[in-house]
Length: 467
Image (tube, rainbow, N blue to C red; front, side, top):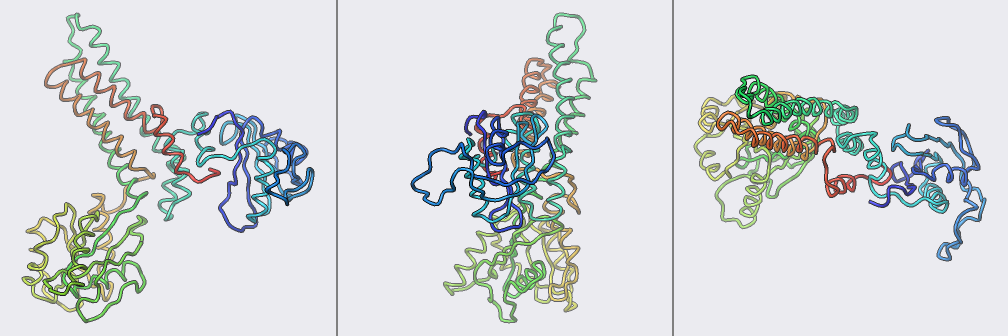
């Protein structure tokens, strides 16, 4: 990022044509730029209508832009808002120009702000300044980008909760408890020569256990929140004509795949993006698994196996109207996968599903019975999918999270586990204190209390310009 003392400007609304567009300016020269474009600075937080003119203070005309407006020429008119520091989004003086939302007009207004002394903002620079000025923490900054890019109503509401500080409050509560425990252990080290052995106090171990339990609960919620954010991948596997394409169409609620009584209709991997209980999911319909000498079909099966290896969950679709033994043989080479869900299909044909249930049990896999043709059992299937992915029937989270948050909590949990081991087995106060310090550092990285410049650059560079 550039110098934080610069005044920055950017178009804050989405590209394209709209009724209203916004150019946002933030920094020490914001009021000077407002005066150069509109002739005055409005009262704080009061919208006023003004003509927007090319600044008389603009630099010499660029010869490469022969149609650049002349000094004082009107380029648009609209609403001006002024937010003085520190009561603004960035914590700096902020001015917003709300004009007509055409891309040409917006670009002219932005160029006017740049000509008056601002520079073009980098991606995420407004949010970064808000973070650096203590207006929001790092979780809330990330929630802004997540809210903008939300792909479902549930994701948008969860991002808004993260933006309001719910996730940060849970992290902070755990952090405060961890700090108190560190103080206790440090005191025990300082008084090691005394007759009282503070490290042997059962309350110390109990407190550490309580922190670890809270940590695991937060990790489960955060893992679910990260899943809601990034989504997951489902691969449909099974023998030819087991009903995989019919199931894909049911989940997608449209005719995405060709359905035919002829086996082998699907020869390549078909991809469809859907939502399951508000969670974005990519469903891969793969070629039927069977022995074949056909080179095209063999390539399709190879791609199917690759898709299954890369998926978060494999739905093994079994045709309950056909003998089990032939399908067992075809699925014998199913790639090893920690998460599988057996989908016993074609209930509408009144088939005996008991052997298929026993088969799933023998493989320690959950199962669900459906009819893709009639739509029977689809709600139970969706619940089973969410349970297989998150461990719960419903997605139990109140906020959106990122993979980074999960990784930091896992790092915290690792240091807490080692701290407990050092306390219980070795009574090694110095080592316990060091592990608790590392756990605190990992937690601090979530909200940005402890974050490297490289991490901040990576996070904010992923934002769109103007945010």
